[in-house]
Image (tube, rainbow, N blue to C red; front, top):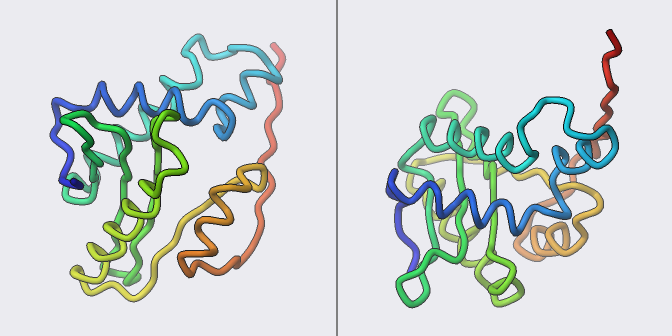
Length: 156
């Protein structure tokens, strides 16, 4: 079952995020390269982004439930001005990956975008996240551009 996320379930989302983004997170890669310069672990920084996504569009955060437990989630942002829906975060607990849950959640988000009358759906993926990239292509997303993420430590 897929349904809207409740505010009190946010801690469950953070745990899934931490477990599933270990290899794909830019924040994790930055922390691996430079150490924890900020004092907040990478997954807490990413959870702040997800919390903001939840507050920006609480009607567009969906969870997948199996046996009463959240096993994955998707956050979306919509822009009526640009007629665009954007999938911000998709996270599936590692024990449930490669079982079609990502596909279900994306399709649910696309139906939500259609119901909202939007004309374009967007999603970003890191080049190193090959399985996600292949999933998005299978679902009909087209590669538009590539982006390189750079970071540097600011010395005192």
